[in-house]
Length: 482
Image (tube, rainbow, N blue to C red; front, top):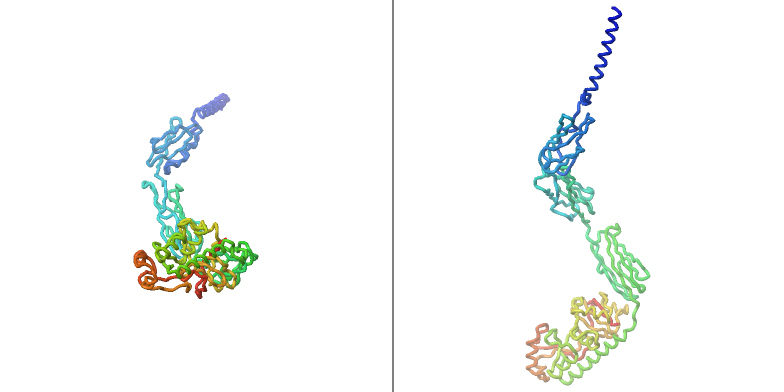
């Protein structure tokens, strides 16, 4: 080859290389790597968003939506679902277009349960139902979970089964991915019966005692006192008042699973009646003397529970005895008359005992508590005598017999109803003693309660004090004048 030919070939090669370099510079960047959109199909829920990108291009894309009411897109390619439907999201890069079909589904907005709280006994089951809203939600199913399946489990269909005592939360969560959920609280009850004490609060005087009974125990019961300087308790539940103050007596089964408490108040021992109590006894003694004197004069005090026959004041009762030949009282009425004369009760205020309970008129309990101490004992009179638990002037409400009277001391009572301080008189005997027939006829008509004044009336010789023997009948409440 000639030298000139070799020179021409080299020039040709250089020119070709230069042409290729120029050609490469003129070719767009996209030609070096195929550009593509990050997703071509996407399903989302209303309110959800995701990001689209054009990969393989360094140029900025211009984004648009074929239906902005269904799915919108911003300049950064963030797509947001706005309502159920379909839309095409397009990215324009130079003269190229890239698209993604977006399907928007209606999400669950609310999950509601037919039960918010459930109580079940161990081993029992119940069904909980879930409802999702709106009705147009594309996936209406829910999943169920329990915060503690050891206490209560829940099936895939919402069946809750109680396993152990305790509390647990059952939750239904929408399966559409929205995260919407609803919960209910399940309480699994202990299958043990509650431990119950005969008293939950007790007031005793120093030196007094009372036995507490317990029911519902599934195991041996152990007793304890939070302050033995105030009260102690024996293995049989007998509480002994040791000193003034307050404490709590606890009863607990040996396994520690059942327990109950009684609040104890111990008052300083009282050995003498108050001046007010002595005054009260003097008033009753005066009444008793009047009854005895009036009966001797042919004026009688009879027994009646009728509000139409008993009067509001002792002077009115005495006036009936003198003017009409007969007046009326009953056990609680006499006591109220004396307290009214002492200005402790108002003219129309009254209370009475019935089966160990105290029934108060309007505002009476508050009035009495300003002048009296009211406490529950549940003991026979003989027990109280042994403990020095009764003081002269104590007003006593008896359990089981609907009776109220006043302890006078030396095991005697002021009583209008249970002692033998009078006798039944026949109507004809009262007429013969000078009680007008018209009076007895009116009283028979107005007597709306036991005993009916048909043939005879119980007439008092006095109000006491007399002995009384109620045997095993217990004193329920004591009202002690301060």
